[in-house]
Structures are given as C-alpha cells and as structure tokens.
Image (tube, rainbow, N blue to C red):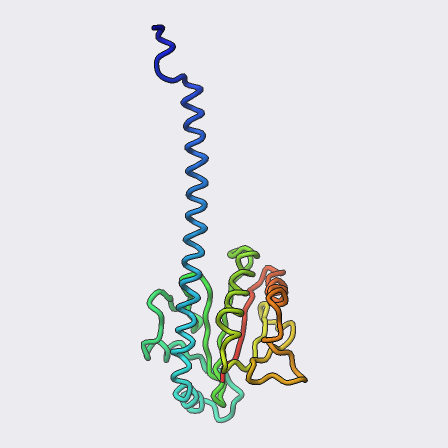
Length: 211
C-alpha cells in the first residue's frame, strides 16, 4: 500500500474544518437568537405580573401623590415606593432616572398622576442599540399581548423622544364613537404604529395610563 493512500490530505482536512466552522457559527447564531427570544418572552410574563402587582396598590400611590401635589397636574415617580413595597422583579435593575431596566433591555417607568391614574412608560432605547425589526416585534407583543387586554386601560400613546405622535388610543372601557379605540386596531395597524415609532434614531416609547 502506498503511503499517500493512508489518512487524509491537507486539503481534505481543511475542507472538514471549514464545514465544522460553518456549522458552529450557524449553531451559535441560532442559539443566540433562541436565547434572545426566551429572555423577551420571560420579560413579557414578568412585565404582566408587575403591572398587576403595581395596580393592587393604586389607592396608596394616589395618596402618596396628593401628599406632594394638591391638584392632578404633576407627575410623581413611583420607582422608590415600588422597591420599598417589594414589587421590583428580581432581574430588573434600577436606573438613575427613577426607572427600571428589565432583563430584555427595556426601560420601564411608572408614575402617579392623581385621580387614581397610573402611567406606565415602556421605552425601547435608541435605534442604534436595538434593531428596528426587533423593536417592532417587542412593540407589537407588548401592546397586543399585555396592554390591549387590560380592562382598566384608559389611553395609550406613542412618543419618539419628547414628541408625541399618532392618535390617542383608548381602552375598551373608555371607547366611544368620538375616539380611536385600541380594540379596533388590527395586528397590521398596530405593527404600522410600532414601525412609525422606530423610523428615527431616537427613543421610542409606549405610554399608557391605567385607572
């Protein structure tokens, strides 16, 4: 038997290594995508429970608000009170701006506005930190799966930076012929609203009031 018939040639070995490398990269990319989806799905479940827990103390937040403001014209941030009440999810981090950061990187803010109105803000951050298609997917999921089913939803608006745009959308308990109802929006229309929120390189936020 000739020696060159034993083992593999260098070209064959390089080919095998190249194939293994390609499969490894594909596997890592798929794993990373699956982990990102898992983290966001988990953050949705956590966020839904967080809203329910916060609203259990609605009267307490209202009393705390009126200790500072005599009329419903102010904005009383609730982050510190939420932490003191033990309502902060374990995986959430505290921000310097009186808000939270969830495990998916979303920025969560909560404030009392008087008259038993609690405002929630979910911000996706600058567009250069989160890809537009990912922002849109998160936006649609949060609105359709968490916010729209809420019986105590009053209004929902979109903000890009400090500028409000689009319609004021009303919850099902506050709908009438003279307003735009969130329940009337199709999945595609919600996606269009979310896409509009992602068009510029600025912070995109969903702001909604429960009462």
